[in-house]
Figure 1 (cartoon, rainbow, N blue to C red):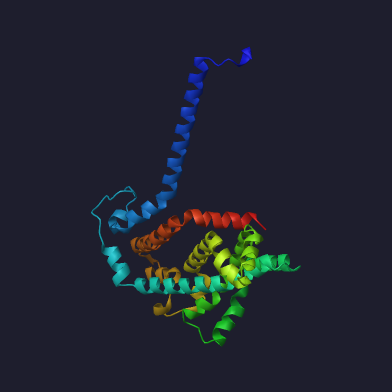
Figure 2 (cartoon, rainbow, N blue to C red; figure 1 turned 90 degrees about the vertical axis):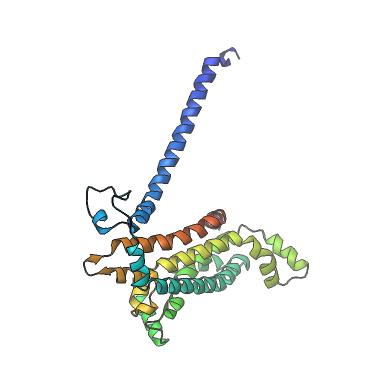
Length: 293
């Protein structure tokens, strides 16, 4: 044990290394945060820049070299249909989320709990549907939209988007359901609940992180999808943000750059707030749903 004697010099050296390691960790964390926030900060500043301030190369892009202006916010709200695009995006997203939950939760529960020999293969097949590129489904889905008389209507997106959101949501919920012991719902059924009652009253509350993950995934995918929204909708009054903003603010070779950045910031802020509000449950839903099953 004589060789293990720790001197005061060793302790001080260890303390210095520990302090240096902590400082390096915090510096890396701060630099990473600044790098991640940099594009958003630049977009927010650009929103209020004058054209002459934006297009001079010698000007610093992260400061106001000239007096800020609200003209580009005014252009976005008063000379484009941004408010209409935002409303269309919101109600389409909410409906798609509801449809996704109504279809994916029972499907995931039946595949995870009913112990059929084909359940595993069926779950994999459902997930593979999500991997099919949208361009391969475009012709068949366009015929469906025309047959339903929904062309040039946002209702076409309500019909089409669940074909993207439901498969991966089912796969995600299957994995999460497998982390919940069957004994819990079996005990509930012994106490008098039906299988449906046990799922609604006992399993669903435990599934909340997974449901949050499904809601966030379905809504963000709906809000950012571009191909179907561009192909199926032409009237400005029916467009969503993903297609309405670029088509109205990119006119030929003229880019209304500050207004484009304003739209990006206004869309990103509420989504970021909601995302951070449920961040812990969102991560739990994705990680547990991904590593199980």
